[in-house]
Amino acid sequence: QVQVVESGGGLVQPGGSLRLSCAASGSIFRINAMAWYRQAPGERHELVANITTGGSTNYADSVKGRFAISRDNAQNTVYLQMNSLKPEDTAVYYCNMKIFSTNLVLYDPWGQGTQVTVSS
Image (cartoon, rainbow, N blue to C red; front, side):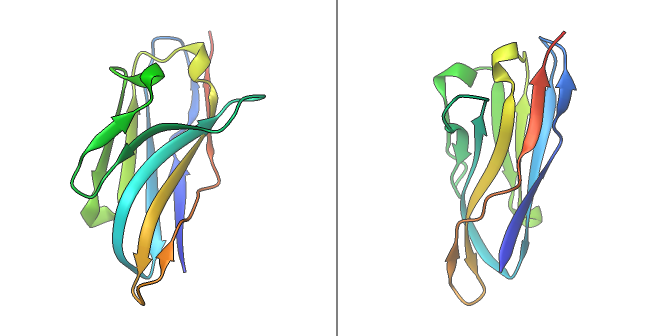
């Protein structure tokens, strides 16, 4: 079994920054894509950013130029650096990874979510 756990959310003023982390644990052989999603109240679940094994990244238009996704393969961790935060970035942020276990089963775990609130 494998799992992922997010951390780093909180309350920040507009224009501020936060850094989210998500660490995978368990019987991990290889992690392919890593991604961050978010869901605001009354809104649909949306992709914020993802990153491939090779480091290629993709961002939602709403966060381009403000957010940066990165990964540390040695630590099985993905990060989301969020700058110039806006009230509309308020949401629960979720981590997702595509993980091959040591017995080569592909898992698709989601974290429990971390709340990000942007408010003055």
